[in-house]
Length: 106
Image (cartoon, rainbow, N blue to C red):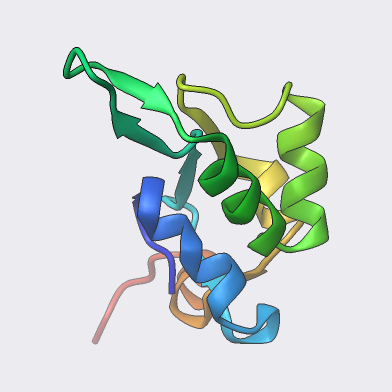
């Protein structure tokens, strides 16, 4: 269940867990960026090989989405809302909550 922000290393779950075992809530947001190391000056430097490996482990739908946004860069890009909901099933609890409207209890 992805509920809230899943960014950076958290997104590895998309490649490690089967697609049919992942669900997203309406609050889910995925954040992607390039892999990096500290350079000689102590500043972040993109690690191209690690970025390629990370990109290749993502499912095809996620890779396509990332590619349409220019690929993995230092700047974080976010997948959420309708776009994310079109790629993964809703979590049962979230789907159940949206199917029921508040009613008076006796």
